[in-house]
Amino acid sequence: MTRSLTTLTDLVAAVRQATDVRTGWTDTADLVADRLRAHLPGPEVLTPDQRLGRHDRVAGHLLHAEPDGAFSILGLVWRPGQTTRIHDHITWCVVGVLSGIEHEELFDEALNPIGTRDNPPGEVSGFAPPGDIHRIRNVGDEIAISLHIYGTDITRVGSSARRYYN
Image (cartoon, rainbow, N blue to C red; front, side, top):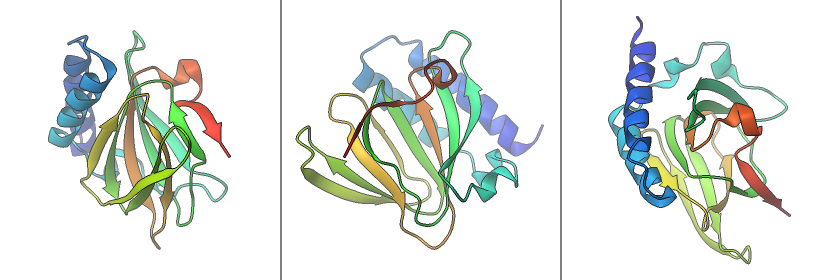
C-alpha cells in the first residue's frame, strides 16, 4: 500500500472515531480538525492527473464517503485565480491545505467582511453553521490543493453549500 493510501486509511479511521463521539457540530469540527492535523496527507493523495485541476472550475475529487452518511472526504484542486462564490454550509466542515496557499475571506450574516486569512500548506481549520460564511480563492501562481471533510455524504446531497450570496 502506498503512503497516501495508508494515510487516507488512517485518516478515515480517525475521522470515524471523532464522529462516533456524537457531540454538537462545533465540537465535532474541532475533533475532526485535530484528527486531520495528525493524519494530514500530502498532495499525492490525489493522482497526478487529478492534481492538474480543471481550467473551467475548482476540481473536486471524492476520496471517501462513509457508508452511513456521517462524513465524506474530498480533495479540491484550485488553479491560480479560481475562487468560490460567497457561501455557507449545510453541515460542519474541516479543511486542510496540502499545497499552495488558499486565501479565505470571512463574512458575518449581513455579509460584512470580518476578516481574511492565508492558509499555507499544513494549515487546518474547522467550522460549523452558523458563522461559516466565506469565500476561498487561490491568489497564488501555483496550483493549490486542499482536503475537505464534510459532516455528510456529499454524494447524497450534491454540494456542501447551503446558500450562495451575491
